Length: 484
Image (cartoon, rainbow, N blue to C red; front, side):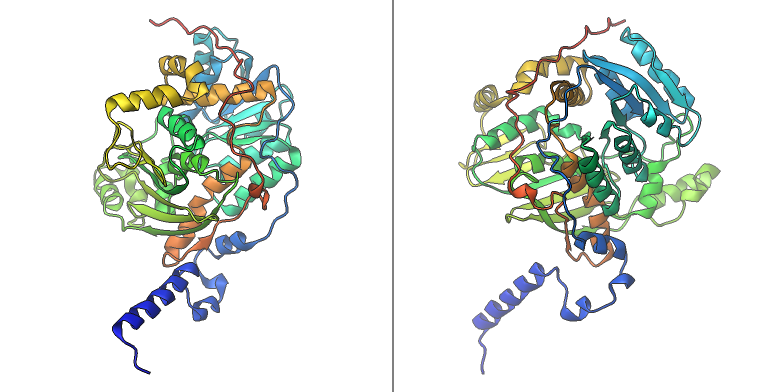
């Protein structure tokens, strides 16, 4: 039968759609030994069925009039979170832990600055964190060790010993770790929150509220990322172990997805009406890290072990589809010259918002951005309650423009009032799962891979995150330390 050009294009298009829907794989490819493919354990874990023990979405744990805290990891993010929590009334700092005692001693100075009593010191060994987690005088553990397996190990151990836990991003480095966090949180009924501070960025909160009010219509697509020029070859002070460089030597993927995807997931009601379902990921070659390591190794023997020419690609780009048919483009690049950006473009049927390049912009479909006057009117009308109450104080205290303080204050406020935390264990697992899933996809020809439903189906009935602050918000702040 003769096939004309128009029919050929139509048939080819249908066939191409089928290939995309099935992850660009053929029947022959499906029959190959799955255990022979790179990162086969990730593919296997993505397909395993799980049963929910207890739904932690919306769970309100018994309130803590006093939030007795311990901090594990005091190198970079740990002191920031410690300083933020030291401002919050009703928070007692009971323990400070780092394998390097000099960091514990420096953290004690933060408490002294705030006029607070010293906390118990834990340090001097690799697993000293276990002793802090066992301390009966601690209710809540904040974890800020270098990312990798320790995040999930410490968080799981803390919950097993009766503590709520907050952990820096990503909360898990493998799907197995992510599921362990979920199942431990459900079984112990202890909160596990990933400390994704970008969800408390003022523009993100403004546009989240606008999305809730329907101003952008039905959301369709989002662009997000973490694009930031960093020199990770600078040695970390106090005997740091160059963990960022080592990570880039051994994992070719999106290593830090949640700064980009976290605020997008909140706008799209991920795990609360929709879920992340499918991902395909691709990395460029490395054009900078290997060369930099080689040049440094010529001048300093310290860098010899890093002269391996085995680094991840500079740019990783992932395409994600949700169960309800929305799409997300997610990027990661911290090694090429570029101005800082998380992109944060959200497109809906009635409008669009975009944070970067600064300043943030909004349009409602007339092919033009809102004017400065219109932006001010929109901001005045839709600024959410948390920013109205605490925004000026958060800016004064600081920490990424105030979002670090807002995140820590609201977390303590939720615990003190017996309210659900605003990022639960399902968010921690789903957002973190992009790391191993993008790694699998990159290594397997950018084929798509299923994103597990960490809610085990409860996303269908989970209610969207409440951002009205109709409950709580009554936690006060201690006087700011005098400057000078």
